[in-house]
Image (cartoon, rainbow, N blue to C red; front, side, top):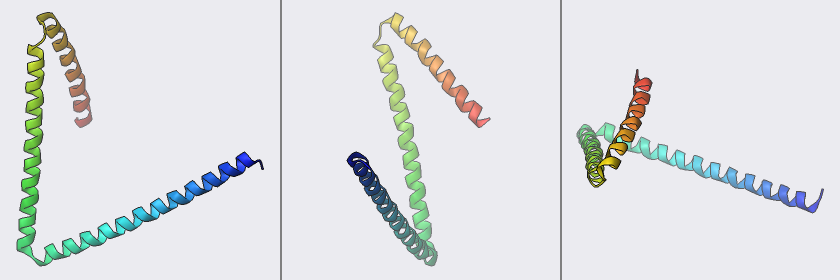
Length: 115
């Protein structure tokens, strides 16, 4: 075995050991997460009022995130309109055709996936 092959073998072996350690660390993290989840679920099951309050808070957070996403879509739409208004008329028409083509393709893909 040449020195180069020996070095390569040692490096490969060392990297395999590192990956094993990463797997162990990840597994321990998962176990800890599961224990924390079980503890929290237990607390919620023993206190129906707290469970209802927690569920309400999660629903409020979900609603807020949905409103945020909607606001971002509206902002993107307004920004696109502003950008289009800033273009020369000929370029505006060309860009509009291209945008419509892109949206048609994307909508077709979405419809094909859902239907």
